[in-house]
Length: 424
Ligand SMILES: *Cc1c(COP(=O)(O)O)cnc(C)c1O
Image (cartoon, rainbow, N blue to C red; front, side):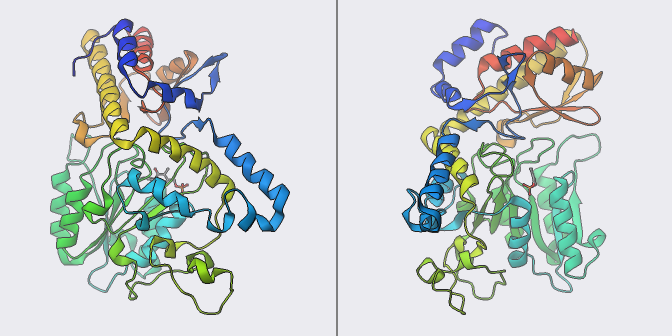
């Protein structure tokens, strides 16, 4: 695509953009009384317009019905999670039976690893990526320790080659093959939180399986950001949070995916709770546990209705807009972002900003991670002063995520012209 460095160009792109109106469906924070240019949807997505109304509905039903709300509420709490499968499935490329909105991300990773990390004395290694999100590495280390292994030996992290900024997919594949019979589990981010690199999950799953390993992904930075085909890729399990790209509010309910062939596999261990019991006998309070024959079997507790109300408001927007259209716009928006950064470097005559995110649109989502070669913190503060909210990572990285639901080409242009003024 051809990009220009003028406001007219950006504004005309917004005029052609069929998703432009979705911006009005979100609440923007104000900076100096003006709507912020919000580039931190990868960290905490914006509030959807219907979120408050949907929560108030549940508050009202609680007021009106008390415990009877389980069946009398407009959206009965007893079966509250059920309609979410239909909304989540297209976002992660799964069958409805394979997804469920539940729990929180790190908790869910542990629950899933109870089922899917089953090491033996010889096959016990876990492959992850270097600079994975710390919570994931803590979870992996503690899982290894829980099974009696030394995490230093059991958890293998693959990193970029010397002098490179992100990890070659081929190196991940080679590492899986090298670990071979010792590899129990591949468990990595679908999109790395730091660099924004999108991994080739289909290929990694295929090679993982051919080496006898189980393959799962943390999709915290992938769900709602990139095109996912979990079922077609035959990924064994995945988990994500809903407060980043999925705009469902701080600490809101998360989600899991379990590949269909595992649903009725009686040999899989699983930690059970009453919400994993089939709906028709759940409230009979019987001694015996009758598991759902879907991903719902992994549910433990009754649905956190208030946070799920927000989640529904957000997922409805995703389903209206459609992931294909969102990904298409996202590629253009972040393509534009990469281009304006190159332009600033070219005009400066030196690399002031090193982009550590892959430039190939098949290897990234919308996030662009920038190493600031000079005065990074000052640049971050100056952007903020100018109404542009970005994300700062010590010692020198600024991450921005132009998200297709509520960012515009004009936002990227304003970022460009402001950054130019700060740097040049
Ligand atoms: C955001 C994020 C988390 C956060 O975990 P919570 O359990 O939701 O607090 C974990 N892992 C990754 C990869 C993340 O991006």
